[in-house]
Length: 176
Image (cartoon, rainbow, N blue to C red; front, top):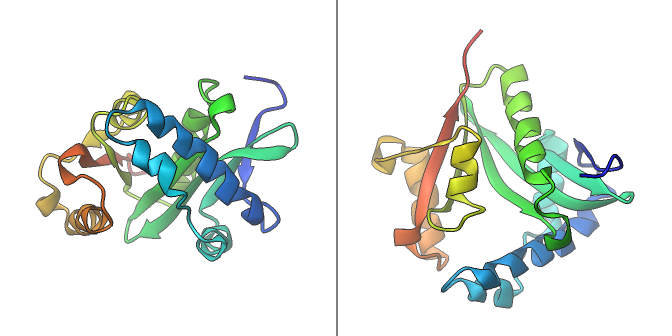
């Protein structure tokens, strides 16, 4: 990690740059068996979606060389903060930026007195569930017990993601 790397809240001027970061990060899926199609799809979140996260104060960027090279977009849902996406450009992966983006989201959730941080991810991709588990997230064994997350997982399957490779995870935050 360079001394110039920093995590900061996303600004409106960052928004047009985030789809390129997302597309670059998707290239990593070429190394995951059966998931190269994610890189090939060319799909990314519209700028309007990123702008909503910025307005809500639930988006952070990893900046290197004066530009965003990673981001985390989240949304408050009840008493939890849900991470919709974490993306870091391949050239900047392995430097702790993803971990630091998660730490920013967790700090935000704690500051607001939220009970947990949640996300959905691939079970078998090293930089997905195993990464989040190392940071303190626990896999939700029965998503049906958490209706919001069960709905998200079902929506992901409807969008073409392989349900047998997806899971929901949660990091409980201590109260007080």
